[in-house]
Image (cartoon, rainbow, N blue to C red; front, side, top):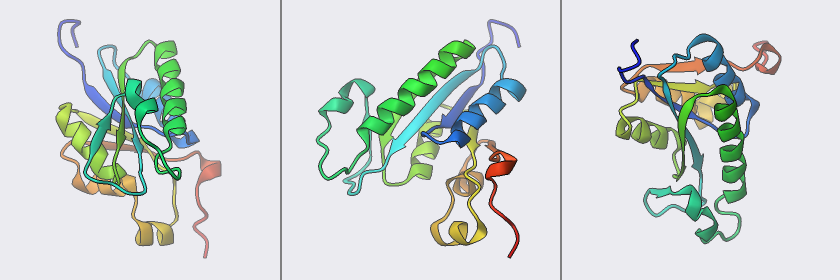
Length: 164
């Protein structure tokens, strides 16, 4: 790809888990191209939602938070962590923090708005029972995204047991 061509726009959902960190490192090692632009997304899940809201990082401290309805501190920690990782790696990026009751739908909406070419997500490695009863963000992305989805599995030591 020449320097004048725009790079890929890659959406990468992030949270404080080691799985997201692993997905970012995997991306750097196996997938990264010089002109790539990463759109990190962190979704805050309020207990009660009245529609979808995009929250600018600068305005996070102005959000009325009662009864722990939104983990603003967690959002700020995640933002700081991935900002540092991206800057150390020399990756072009932006970070968006959204409040939404559906993590998967927020990711899909953001991917569409940004014209993403790819979504990279770290898998939590939940077991079959939990996935069947609660659903899975990565499964929802795989079955509903209009762009390719790359799911980075958890480290072997963090995978759920497959024995009965």
